[in-house]
Image 1 (spheres, rainbow, N blue to C red):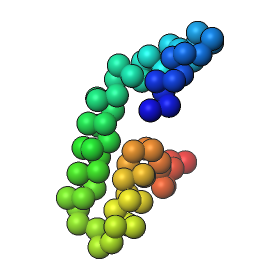
Image 2 (cartoon, rainbow, N blue to C red):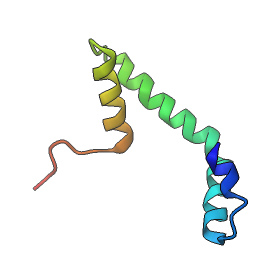
Image 3 (cartoon, rainbow, N blue to C red):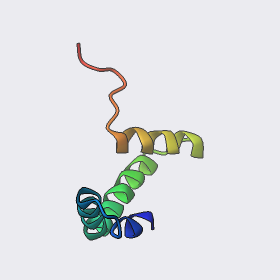
Length: 67
């Protein structure tokens, strides 16, 4: 895990960010897993489409932005 090695940096903001990610890693993984399971439950025809929907959901990308 590259964030682990960032805790050995000399820059305090990098150390703080790495420590935060390290503490919240399990929660982030659970969140990503739930997004993947929700997309999978919709029954996409191919793994390519499923991956695209996971990325769209995880990135909170608006396909049709409000005007």
